[in-house]
Image (cartoon, rainbow, N blue to C red; front, top):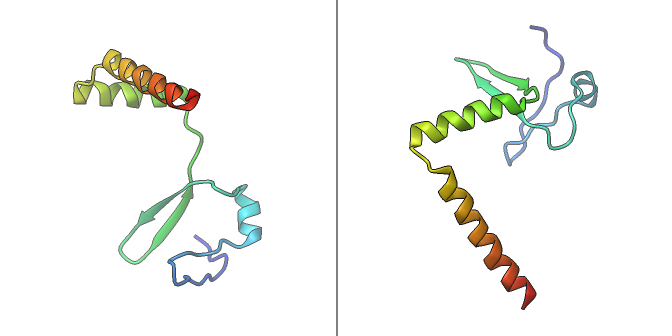
Length: 90
């Protein structure tokens, strides 16, 4: 690992990633980074894009583990959407 630059932590705990480093990694405003913590180090890693298949697989695992009834969730979402539409039309 090479040292690219030295950055300062603000009073809000923020750091600025130098422009040349942002450009090097193609970082854009609002992009999320993974923060890995070691004994005496912090590592920022650019998150890759997540495929729909991966999202679907993880969602299915959570649904199964938590015993979630998807049909109930869809019905609840529809009821809420209808209520919201009624309030807007008043």
